[in-house]
Amino acid sequence: MLASPTLRLCCAPATVLAALVVGACASADVPTDVTADVPPSAPPDTTFADGDRVRHPDAARLVAQDPLWARALALHFDALVMDGHIDTPSLMLDDGYALGDRHDAATSHVDLPRMVEGGLDAPFFSIYVSRAYGERRDAVERAMAMIDVVEQQVAALPGAEIARSADDVRRITADGRKAILMGLEGGHATRGRVDVLEALAARGVRYVTLTHSNTNSFADASTDSARWGGLNDTGRDLVRAMNRLGVVVDLSHVSDSTFYDALEVTTVPVMLSHSSCGALYRHPRNVSDDMLRALARNGGVVMINFYATYLGAGRVTVETVLDQIEHAARVAGVDHVGLGSDFDGVDRLPEGLEDATRLPWITYGLLKRGWSEQDVRKVLGLNALRVLEAAGAASASRE
Image 1 (cartoon, rainbow, N blue to C red):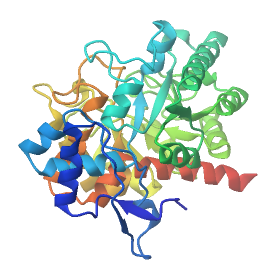
Image 2: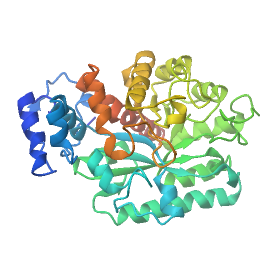
Image 3: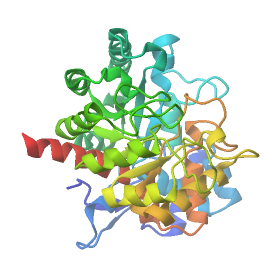
């Protein structure tokens, strides 16, 4: 059950929304205290709001350009906004990057001030281990060192907290703070061992990408030579262990065969934390429509990647990303789509999505295309939250 009994702002009159957002000209902190009762029949997972305030410095200018921005900003900053994959921890560990300081979009894409400005509430921070580490002990050490630096920096920030569950996400964001989740990118860092997986789960890792760009000792990758024809027995055992531990199985980067093998084994919804649609642009990292339909049958979520290389050969803009979201929603259903930017892990982003401050343009674009506010909320974060909650519930039921 989700905690919020009210749907804030999105039910308020448009004139009220415009007044609230235009007020950002005087103050970036626009109160979002206009509420409306939700009918008792409304499903709770479509009404959850984090109660944040509009903090985008361009709010007044945007509303002046198009009154729809008043509705978009009010919705965006009230909605739970999640991101399936952000690579900022690599900067934190390797470059001494300070998450709490504001940085320039030319050098990085995410920090706490820009999360606040862009309304990003609950990102999965990628605990990325390069394929160069192989499946040696130092691959695990690399993952643990990255978890250490994320924990240390987040603990020092009053505006953020590590989240380990869907309930943590609700609690932290309802308090106006940012919930930082962690996911392991590069299943080779488990060394194919359940005990290592257990140790990572105990540290707060809540998804594991079965492969990165490399085929490993238990699973084939989409951008490497096949070795197993999908998952081998060790890989199947790891998927079962993830189900038991409440760790989401992440199928970004895996081969098509690995994808289907994992769906045969898992009893819990999966995610593709940062993948896009092959029907719109063919690339080994993108997924086919058949895979999207299989994902929907599993109850999982595909989180659309912003990396321009995966989205098109020519000019790539925020409209390209919106096309991807709409295609995934048409094929898999709107309950199975989310956002997985790959911020701080890529060298080319779409025009208009240069860093975390540009996330409101997703909300505006979907509303402009005629999407309902309820469906926008699902894509922004509720679908990912549902998958995270399902993993936790499945684990708890085994105890």
